Each structure stands twice: as structure tokens, then as C-alpha cells.
Image 1 (tube, rainbow, N blue to C red):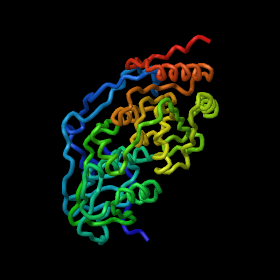
Image 2 (spheres, rainbow, N blue to C red):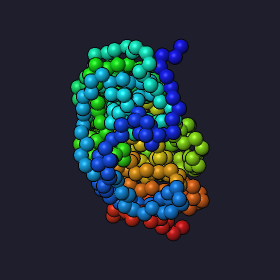
Image 3 (tube, rainbow, N blue to C red):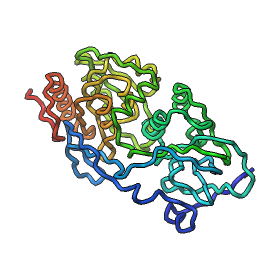
Image 4 (cartoon, one colour):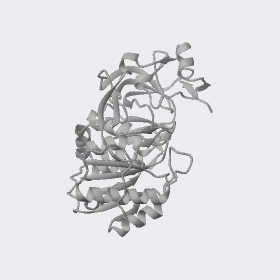
Length: 360
């Protein structure tokens, strides 16, 4: 039986026109270039097929945003929409990018709880999104106010439950609209791709991590061969077998990330001086290691510099990207050349230009 009403909408603009959406003030949405990160390897090709050369620009909000606020009589729905004074409060809502429909929690009496914590995000689809958008906010906040409320679909994910248990955070899956007497709202202070060393340090402390120094010369390949993406509906062309064979031939270790647990990644710390990785959420585990160099394999039109920024904040000194959808012999030759270059310590910042493989 329906306990609230769903209404199909035409995005944020239509909601604002109806007075049902209270957007974040424009002054708090302006952006600036926070840092420029040089990298080695290929110039990435974006969605318009134009090469984007090094350095990668990491954006952040131009004006400081508040870390927390408190709202009384907040109505929170299973989609994570936060209603306050008759409208959706974007600054308190979960994943509110152009929702195809909304829930109106005003038509029937609601269960009332005295206190709870909610998190404002832009999007949460993958494990990487979960850590970038939610976990680091929870870690920075410290003590919460009542249980953490999670949208129904997110609370159903195993990695979400495991992380919250690891952090010792009580939560509640929202399966029907709730009326919160006083809500603590954790706001988004940085753009998704922006990471600082302080944030990584907090995350390591809360996860009780003390990463050891890796074995000199160790090499690890994080393969997504057995992973189905939560984000990308089409298969990302990645020659897993050939890359794995190259890494193994150099004495490296190849792991498939699809079934690895948090503790499995922790145990790989000694093998991760240099990491070759298919772009994806497994790279979040750079915070568990003291990796010195990363070679990230990416697909044209599908890459963001967030994992590079996370790696730099975690202490990675050299980052390179390689376009996986170029012809295979060229890709493998470039990978060999990069590994040779990193092994010699000859990595002067990087210019985002295709590396020239050594003569054969």
C-alpha cells in the first residue's frame, strides 16, 4: 500500500518553478582549479575525442562550504530526498541530480524520530562514489547525531554495510518517509575529485590502517576481469589477459578484484610499490598502501582524475595513464616502457604525452 505519493518531474528546473526545490546558492557552486597534477603516459581522450594533456586539473568549490548544519522537522524519503518547509532541500539531499520522480511525504502521517544524521551528496553509484562522497564525510564529522539515515537502495549494498560496521556507525535504511525532530546534515565541502592528505590521514586512522613499506621492486596488477561495473553499462575494452601476462613475466602479482574483501586488500600492501590498475573502485585501496607509482588503464571517454588525486594525497609520487583501447602491441610496448622508466626512477613529473617504447 502506498504511504506517500510519487510524482514524475522534468528535472530540477521544473521543480524550482513549482517551488518544490530549494537549490544550493549559486555562490557556493562556483568552481576554481585547486591543483594541477602532472602525469606520465597518454594524453586522455575525452567524450568529444579531444586529447586532454597533462597536467590534470582538479576542481574545487571557490567559496568555503559549511561542514555541518542542523535542521528541525526534516522529512526524509527512501530516495534520500530531504524535505524542509515544503520543498526539497538540495543541501541536505542524497544524490539529487535530476531525479525522474520525487516522493511527497506530506500526504499521510509519518513516523517521527527524535534525531538522525543525513549526508548531502551529488551522486553515489559505485564503491568509489560511496567512499568519495559519504565515507570521508562521516570520518571527518566524528560523532553523529542519532543513527545515520541511508536511502533504501544504498543500504542494501554489502560494501556499505561492511564499511559502516568497520567504522562503528549505527545506521537505518529508510524504507518509508520519516519525520526527524532534529537532523544533523553533513554537507559536501569539496568537489568529488578533490582529496587532501589530511582526509587520507583521517581515513587511515578510522580504518585502523598502518600501511607497511612495500617490498622494493614489487609490482601488482588490479584486474577488473571478473567485475561488472555499477556505472558503465557497456563493456570497457581491457586486454586483461595480455596485461596480466606482461606483469607476471616481470615478477609481478595479478589479482582479480571482483571478490576481494577489505582485508584482502590490506594483505596486499607489501606487494604494491608499483600498481598497474584498470580504472575503477579497487583503486580506492591506495589508501591502504604506500604505493610509489601507479599506471592507470583507462577507456576513451570514461575517465576522471579523482583516483589520481586520491593517490597523490595517499603519497603516490608518479601517476601515469594508458589508453586501453589503442592497438594492443602499442599499448603493451608503452606499458613495458613505463615500467622500465619507473624502475629506473626516471619519472620527472610527466607531460601526458604518449611514452616512446624502448627500441626492440
